Length: 76
Image 1: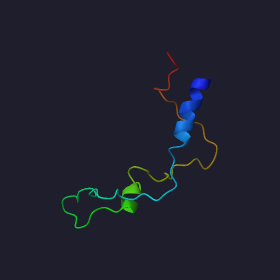
Image 2: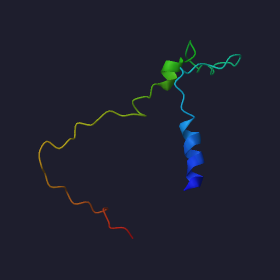
Image 3: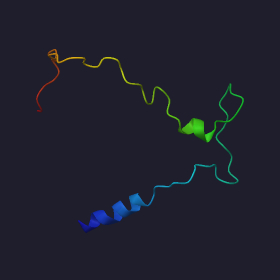
Image 4: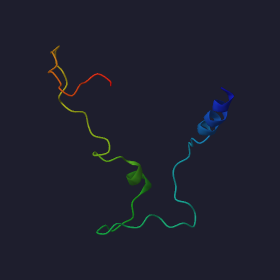
């Protein structure tokens, strides 16, 4: 049990509340081919639609029986 305390404390201490900024003296990421300006931190931190898809409209509106699934097998 004691061996779990040190990693937990280390992980709890690595959260930061400061704004993300580029390191001083270091270059920003390279500008992608075809773009005119380097990406901003806000743009880099915003997930794309593909990375975080929206909710589908296929929600159940009423209680319905599920169709049988041939691949829903019990654990082996």
